[in-house]
Length: 407
Image (cartoon, rainbow, N blue to C red; front, side):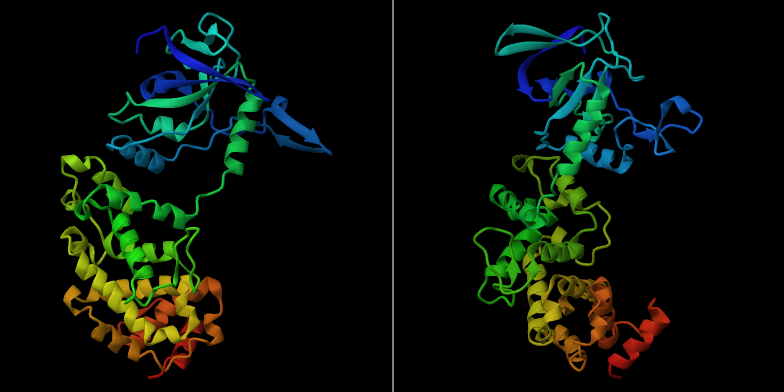
């Protein structure tokens, strides 16, 4: 980067104060920005303590979480994908050095006014004089990236006191509401519309399967999955996300990693599942996904739940989200132990038939925090897939399993 540099800016006035919206390259931010990790000062620093009601607490400095290496690596991989996008603003507080001192000399960042609607942000040197108030992982995710020339949207406060840096960070992160997972998964439909099935990530394929199972006339799940959209109703409490997660467990150990690898290449340049052949995975039906045997994979899921509908679905517990999770846990185990051509409705029927004498309304299955594991264990033991003595079950539960499961 060549300094001094200046970037076009738009002024935004809000009650807290003015800030300037600019586009800055990731490489520039890495050179000129820093973060202060939130930490409590040592006991011997009495000048930085707070006393109230006869009690003393040490002061807190900084406002940032410790950087998470795993998250940084995930972002680094994403920065190098062909459709990387960072529309959210990086928030910076300029003109304090890393010791918290206000900069008043010629090295300070400044604003040049052109007219009432247009300004320039002036950055004299690469000296680190901008604190990252929010967005540190997005910025430092570019540290080892080959895409450092990516432009990032930034909101820059000039001379904003450090106490307000922490207040802004707190307001952003406390008030955030997680996006509903059902809605997030629905958005993968846009991927379906962009490319052919051989370019679909495991998530996109799982969303497709779930949408079909929720709407197809011959599906046991028709009308039973909550899709998370405004015009959808369902008869049960099965969430779309739980079903998608279950399908994903059969074909990928890391759906996010698979998606990012696929998205290092554009669809028109030949994106397809062969790009994932070298990726290690413990998922039992991964080969079917890689070989594009989607019909076989779909039929396995369809036959499995068709067999469940005519047997275990007499009990409502299997039509709830935790029951779906346990059902996929069982399917995953039997898929690990059997070749895909053996996973037919007749095979599933034979397994579930062995469970029909079990009373799944027993209060043993009434503890929500243990329901998933207890259903899975019961299915494994009753079907003969696993022997109870070979499983890690505490003695008190083991006794109950023996009483509940007929021999």
